[in-house]
Length: 532
Ligand code: NAI
Image (cartoon, helix red, strand yellow):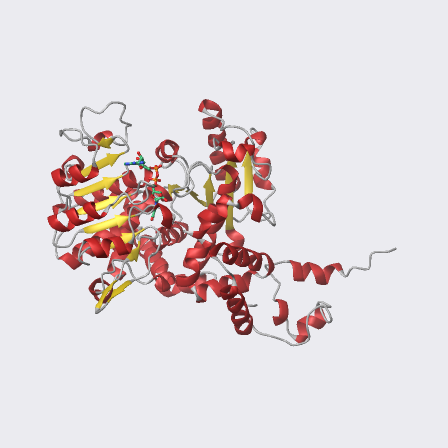
């Protein structure tokens, strides 16, 4: 029998970029032969959003909500982005941390449709041909992971694809980057996660990670191919293993339009939070003693950017480092420690080794404590009480994601610092309300900065993304944080303002290169989800 499928009509309904579902009007239904294929009642975007929101709300848990949104994205992109844009505060934790972590852990089970590009080691020597398979060559932002350190969850191999996809959704939501110009990439060189290797549902290469020069050459090939095929794109590295993250950043940052969000984005957002906390406490960053618990990509990125900031005020970087202390899985970073990697060495102190965080706090007396270790509950009540004993108003960051890995909760901080601490976390916590007292906290969300930075770099057309760009973005973000936010204990503005924040960051970056552009020009140029 002859296939009578009306392919054109179904093509339209199956293309999430142009599908309007029940919002196709009569003229469009006639033109594209959609009559009968859709229910007769003609809807509009507002009604569709209400319906989608109701359905979203009915989902029994966050992973189901994530799956619901992913399926909506597969059906109708405009509706998807508008729904999230209208409900950022509620939906950001679903499309990104903490839920995206759970989604990555189940990626093989919830996989429905191809999204993003998998650059697998099988194609060594042929990466360019894979890139050319991508439908659009006008790519502006690429987010790229090799899945080795997904959030605080470790090596998830090819299942890490949820991360670049999620980050690029945020680029569209936060900074209005057109979704057609976003490219999520997962470099698959295998995984050292034996559970995944043994799992028949796992979708990546089921062998241990390729190492050494084979790995290094493959990443070189990926980067040079990306630069050649998508020359104007900004490349964001994300969730590479600790050593590789800093190694590749150093290797590529002076040659390609690249930055690492775990290192530089985190540095930027935490610096912005500290600058705001300093305003609230009426002091300066140069006067602080900062202790990091965990000394990986995030902590080193934050520490380095803080030192740059302090050194702007006249002292040397070495001078600035004196008040910054690192504590990793082997204890305090001190002179006589063996096998310290190059990133940590500049922070070595002439002190006795301390293996216990509480004793270390008693000795160092930090004013700011920053956790980026992935160690759940590392900031015990005794530690928090000690921070309160040393400081009138201690500043505490518990950055580890997802929520289950956080060094402490908002409640822990509230109860053990008499509500006096300024607290910020990697995953969001609800305010604590106790009698008359309300304790508000903020999420040190990299989304505050990376999308504005990406947009600013694109508009500036600069090739190299320097640290000054991140210092600029940190100051811009801190300036947007209002007196009222500070009064309420928050050190970041509401995430609902994210478009304004991203545009302001981009605007400030473009201006720093003496290029003329108005805020309004950027606002008018970026993508806004609506039916055409
Ligand atoms: P990483 O793997 O590079 O570093 C982890 C560090 O923690 C290492 O220095 C390790 O020695 C240390 N560590 C592990 N166990 C420890 C223990 N028992 N005691 C002391 N130190 C210990 O990871 P990365 O990229 O630095 O990220 C760390 C955490 O921060 C992750 O959970 C990640 O999700 C989170 N993060 C949050 C961000 C945010 O909220 N904006 C941004 C970037 C990372």
